[in-house]
Amino acid sequence: MIDRWLLSYRARPIDLAVCRIIYCVFVAVIYLPNGMWLASIPETAYHPKPGLALFFTTFPPHNVILGLNVVASASLAALFAGFATPAAGLALSGSLVALNSFVYSIGKITHTILLDILPAVMAFSGWGRCLSIHRGRVACDEARPCWPLAIMAAATGVAMFTAGWAKLTTGWLDPSQHQTLHYAMSNMIGTGAHPVAAGLVAHAPLWTWKCLDYITVLFELAFLPAILSPLVFRVVLCVAAIFHLGVWLTFGIFFSHNVVVYSAFVRWRRVKDVRMSWLVLPAVVLVCGYVVTLDRPLAENLWLNQAILVAGAAIGVSYLAGIVLNRYRQSGPGSL
Amino acid sequence: MHVSERVAAGRLALAAFALFLGAQFEASRYVGEPYPALSMPAFPGLPDSDIAIPVLHVVVGQHIFGINDLFPNVPDNLRQYLGDSFMPATKAQLDRPALYRVFPKARVANVNYARRIESPVVRRWLRTRLETLTGGSVPSAEIQWVREGRTADGRPIRTATDSTVVTFDGND
Image (spheres, rainbow over the protein chains, first blue to last red):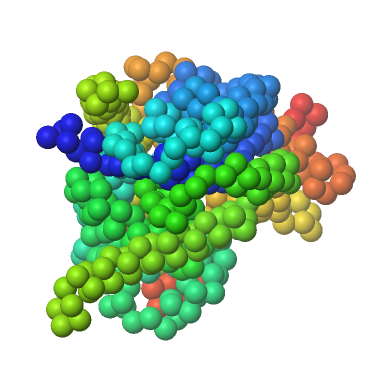
């Protein structure tokens, strides 16, 4: 039964390669270099969470952070080019986890774990077979069982479930309390009024906020059972992509890094014949984005974050619409 | 790769995944949320009430600086936490015995963290930063903590909760 589940997640190498390219561009533009600012803060801010950083008494020397960034960047370049992708993926995940262990040692975890582990989990998925400078043109259109996708689905399901469980057990379902409203307001106070949030806080009745509480808890809990079926899991991912767009519009919080991870599960049906020229535009964006953001802190309002969220939600809506339309066509107009 | 080899690799990965999850949940129980860990933001439930957050002001003469001035190179979603570096000293963070048994070095980091604004390291850092911001010598600064927010019925809250005057001597 476990074997059947592991092999129930199927993907074409070209689908996985598209995910690899999206991932590399996103990480280069938004994420790297990471933690270079640690040298600019007082070392008493070092207050690590349980993990790698607890083996140290303060932030590592700047050169260590620089070295980890060099390893991450070189691995990312190899991954993008499709060169030695298993080794590159493991090295990239290792360096990202090491970097974030120190970044989060100021006492705040920003929950980028799925983005951090994706290259390691997908290292043996064959996502480097297509769109690879190293391998040239290979057949990429045949869907094959892909256990790394099942593991990634489990990781995503567990991670989202933990968020839902924490809410379920701390009163989010209490009809007299309004948690989404509470966090919307405290976010407005902390980071400034977001137009959509300000409008909702001013005009939306309390029962709509309570509905959002229920929907959030149910949706996050649904992730874990959904992993049992690739189809259901994809449906939940579509809802999640729309949810993340809503969170950005309402709270100004970006979860574009999760949406990038969801791209591993997308079937790019129209993408069939692989051309290496497809790599040119992403390569230009990757290099330019990396260079332009080299000396800046992670800018949350960067255009790529917004583009990923909008594109993710659009793909989610079109996938869900496709399912409904297929059902409609199969069953006839009278059955809906 | 034969299907059997593929299945074997998948089983191995799943076993590693299960082991990792076990370790994660045990660590969460005894020493708090670890990193790396498969988790997403919890946003625990809170009672409907006044909503206010602590806001840091560092006052030097006519100048008032906030976390965005003090930490311009830090990603904006992490700045609020670095403001805690200037909180008054506390012993609360030292009480993590389960953590220290596994990670003895954590005690040193937490002693430093608990001292915070009393620490010469922080004072030296703050002086250098404020001199860069003001463009001149800074003999002292007042660190103010203000609760800012709004009441449940929409009225604004702005209450000073704590303040410390830091005087920099030649050693800072």
